Image 1 (cartoon, rainbow over the protein chains, first blue to last red):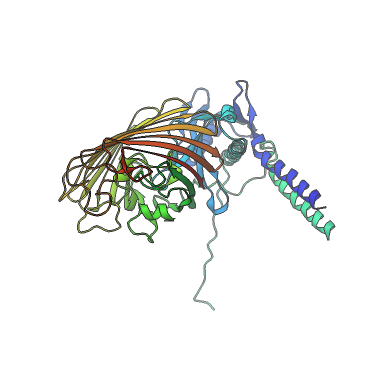
Image 2 (cartoon, one colour; image 1 turned 135 degrees about the horizontal axis):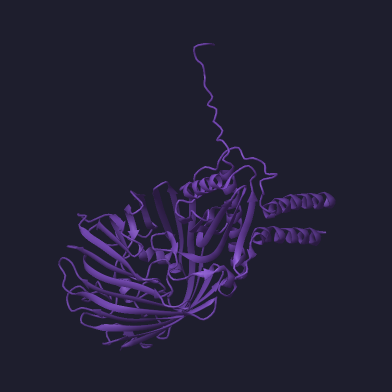
Length: 191
Length: 369
């Protein structure tokens, strides 16, 4: 009985662990890619482009953007932190650089993130975690330089980052009005 | 009861699996998307309190049968001994952050001013702009290649340059980043190294020019100069030449401060080659000289003056072969070290007679978290 329970938990845990990294696919150049086409009826390309740029500039201010106005597209280079450890011992253990591209057309846009390159962090003499100089590991060839457990973890974090990127971008493209926070006021002259 | 447990497990696992797979579903097309209530807030720069550190233990055997090489840490001979438990905490809110790093154990006691105080780093830091940072407190020194934390060193034993240079400096420093390739730190520090409080003055000037001439090559030009503490010029550089091969270099010259003459100088080379994803081999080749003068002169009692190494006017070379074998957060470090001095004045052989060489084997295990 105990064995059965352990086996079930193990199988399901393994499935959970795999979930996020499966968001990534391979493109025609055998590079990991997160690719989405999003349809938004009623919105023209100009509007989508303006909102998309606003999203990138406000949410990812450190991403270096290159805009192709004639093509209604924007490309950028960015990076995000990866984390290791558990619970209170969780801290940054590396950074993942990526290329992001977004293209706009009437009633739809598409975006993709690719060229993921991992740089591990090390703790410096001052107690800060900093990039290990000179170590750049493309995700596609990482299996030869990282342990499988490590690589799975980074793939999962990359999948999660991409998914959240897409969700946030859509929120900005929809340009939903910000709800006014109701302030509770107390009237003291009547009681 | 077993059925209830099984059902609960299945239910919990199903919920967890659904949550995970929900994240795996195709991104929304907008046709059936549930409208979020508000735009996402701008990214926050606040980082939760994080902890990190290390634990280390070692076995050393000196072929003379007793401890012989006087560099820092890993001193006990023919003994399974402990290094230290090191625990650092860091918190950043907006542009302000702090680091507190505590350590416990023999390695800690040898690396801090007062055994029992346990502080390796304790400072606060403020980014006044994206290019300028101010930091104040008690910090690991900016000088040298090697550090106190065993998790940040490749070799477990330490060099003569490290042992005789500063470990920590307390003070106030500002760092300006000119570009990705150049930054400059300048600061004013307490009149003595490795102490929590100054003896009387805060008058040691320190500076570090950081240059990245080409990608993957960084050089640090350091100076610390004060009337009491003396003046040390230091070059520390690392170059990751290929994915597998890294070369490090440390060269320093120290002139003693008030009341002393002499000092020390030396150079150490650190080639390292990753032979697999788990194993890296490295060598430390060091030449160290105790300058003629009173600074390194042997006292009437005790083995060493202010220089841990050869006597004034003498030199020593050290050759250390080290492997780092990684197993997740654990690093195993087998190491063999050959030291040879220009004069038979501080190594001793099996019969405790003066000799000019010493050899030791060391095996350490360092767990970093």
